[in-house]
Image (cartoon, rainbow over the protein chains, first blue to last red):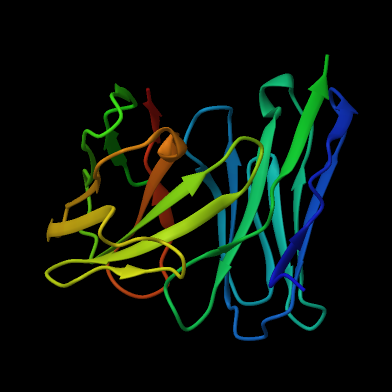
Length: 110
Length: 116
């Protein structure tokens, strides 16, 4: 079993829809959670960074962490075609190195 | 967010030659940097953790004599692919965490290496 599980998709939704992306994990030591957006042939761009459980909102993006269920989510409101990319969850605990999910390929259709 | 600059963005080299990739944190100090390799449509594979002023820590299966890492300062880490072969062709990405501890991790733009 992988430490971090993420559905690779692909996920295709119409413009304006709310997108829900999520990851599950098995290591209870993880306390720091990140979501990245990666366009083709580019480095990942940090979208959200959260510590421990709870919600965090930034513009159209909301990150949720439920440590009791070992489940994290990223919601994108009012999705735009420019949001089409691969979204990667990442997390870390005592060690500094990040453990990544497989990434979900998202397409927003105009 | 903080800026991590990676150079070059693309490089083509002949088989048997060496290629150096630079990773710089432009507006913060990074005690630790990370080097990843990414294959098409796959997630990032950690190659090594680079620590300023000390030897890098390589992940299992990564040849340390082939992928030389130097972290000479708090803002610069380099990855040298030695005696490159076509199977080393890939997308290489660096990352840096601000300061120490589990802070946000920022990524460079990536380097697409093609060995011919």
